[in-house]
Image (cartoon, rainbow, N blue to C red):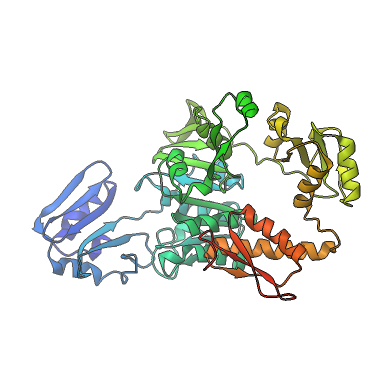
Amino acid sequence: MLIDVLPEPLRSAAAPLVAQELLEIVLDFGRPAEARLSERVVPLGDHLVERRDLLHVLERVSPLSEDNRAGIERTLHRISAIRNRKSEVIGLTLRVGRAVFGTIDMLRDLVESGRNLLLLGRPGVGKTTKLREIARVLADDLKKRVVVVDTSNEIGGDGDVPHPGIGGARRMQVSRPDRQHAVMIEAVENHMPEAIVVDEIGTAPEAAAARTIAERGVQLVGTAHGTTLENLIQNPTLCDLVGGIHTVTLSDEEARRRRTSKTITERRGPPTFDSLVEIIDRREVMVHADTAEAVDRLLAGRPVGGERRKLVEGKVVSDGRAAPKAPAPKPSPPRQGPPRLYAHAISREVLAKVLDDMEIAARIVDDPERATLVLSLRARAGDRALREVAARGVEIQVVKKNSSAEMRRVLRNLFAVVPGVEEDLVREAVTEAEHAIARVLADRVPVSLAPRPAALRKVQHRLVSRHHLEATSAGHEPFRHLVIYPDGGAEP
């Protein structure tokens, strides 16, 4: 169908190449047309491309969108235009789209694990092809509710009816490329998916929307600009996808303990994507099953590691052996019942008295293995025992010193305790702020909260600061309320 939109004699010259892994056909005004195969370029005769040749193609495909892309109804083929200063089309790239099955055999265990998965790789290496099959496997084989956010119709093909290559997954088209992040959030809020598939996460709003989706418990599978994990970390716009980085100044004692300089670079928070795959070529990938661990090793100057997987004669091999299954997701601490606290290098008696005074329904346990939360003295937070506990997903909170005032401060932040205010009102204020923060991060617009007493506004302020946003109080009592702004700051 792609060959059929070409004018003669280009159609006749290109037809025999269809069976030879044809990738794309390039038509540039005033130059001979050429066909690009996986390993060579083939001229399509000596005929110089004329404007009427370009118009011939454009009349037989869908109208060009704002990102200068078009397609052919119910196919995966893509036509991209190059324009001159007068906005006239002077070049076309006709890219062949194929729904190839078996492309995710190397990644199937990661897809089935339910973890968030990010694919990296240079253009043309097969990221979108793999993404398309992942959508089909999630929907048809794993019976999940899947929504594909399809910005350029590359995943589901052109037209209103998606290509069968995505199986039973639903497809949401995006009217303009700059609205991709908004459609990502809309997919979660309106259609209750269990998994979302999105191609080419490339802007800060899209990265923020990805984090919002992941925090809501929806499995997220996507691709991003970049070829390796190191590329992604060096990209200030997208490094938040793998936890972000920041510079930390250590005390002399801590620097000696770690045997590092006083100023180091560390991961700022948990990654949006649990696992990351660097696609080397169509038959070889590098798998980082634990993104957080890989980032930490890279920032510490240690070998990043990873598992190299290849497709050899239809079988997946890993470093010369059969590919092992990806590790199961780290179990989250049970949420039923009161929190179980373990006191590490701090006074258990003082902690018990603080909990009692603050009327916090929490229980102190003797074994960190049974804890859902650990309070540790800062100087001892790096102990090996705590690293093992953290590896299981248990939250570690650090207190600066072994005093009741410091424990009270940390617990007040953790449990959003506001003296003299009912717990339901605190919970309501916290929930409202969390929803507003998610919207600010996704849509990059200021959001006003409901009027609250000063004590509750202070709790909301603390939540905002954790996300590196800015908030100011507006209005007069009793209608004084918080306004949250994107990280560009409040309007003057």
